[in-house]
Length: 244
Image 1 (cartoon, helix red, strand yellow):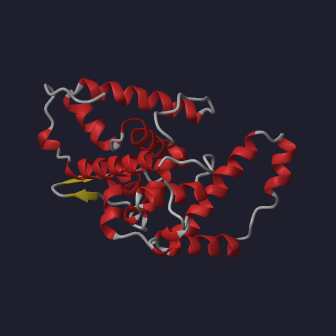
Image 2 (tube, helix red, strand yellow):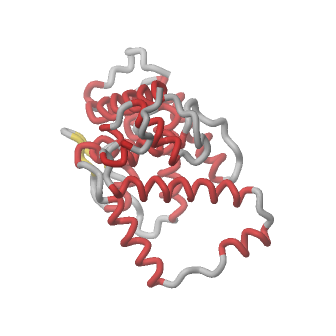
């Protein structure tokens, strides 16, 4: 049963989360609208390119909103996009006794970094694993991880050329909201409050979210982050049976 006050969770979350969730919801809904537009409608909808002053103002606003995540939660999400973070910062990202470094060439096409980010996204969404960890297991000879890399590459290239791919199990939007919501207050909400939050901000399922299902997804994501941070390359065993 839902709480009598459906907005009681507002006092438990950081103000930045409410803005980020509203921006995400609007962005996804706009992307869906654009899919059905004609080229002429798309051109009219997008309008003129914003000037640099406007772009800088938007960047500053988004950087301010993105800075409001607790350090431990931010750290928990880093392994899933370690290579992209390294590519953006030009230096390794370290986890305990190992580091991840994407050595980009000076004139490397931006499309390569897009493809890298897409592969990391697919690895997270389809297998709940960081891409660099699956790659290292593939290199050493874990068959299940080699199979996963083949699927990730196939999906990424299909998306690169505008071809559809089979959606992973679960709802991508739910995981995306948890990704930026954990560390900004979602970890403090009861199952019922989580359902109320998602009723307000989920781009598609605007009502009727299951409290128990969302609680289980939050718990599962928390465990996946712990496992990602606890992974060590020296513990890889090719004879071990890894989950598919």
